[in-house]
Image 1 (cartoon, rainbow, N blue to C red):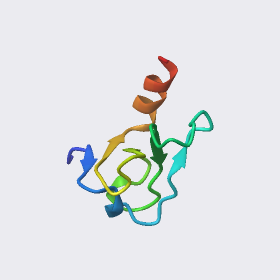
Image 2: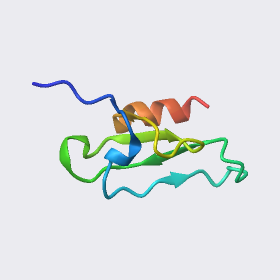
Image 3: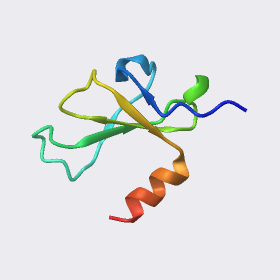
Image 4: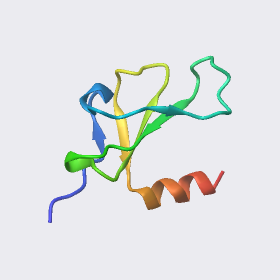
Length: 73
């Protein structure tokens, strides 16, 4: 079994995703955005990127890991 990908060098490598920003965001681009790739080796994972650098890297989490992280705050 191969290891799950943990990041992508540029979030533009994630094709056909819709990035979402929290409704708590102030519009000052000081938050994170999330997306859920629907196909390929990243399908089902949660991608997270810095809204200040939309073409920068994205981290990838399993849905369970992301749910645990967000529940902790």
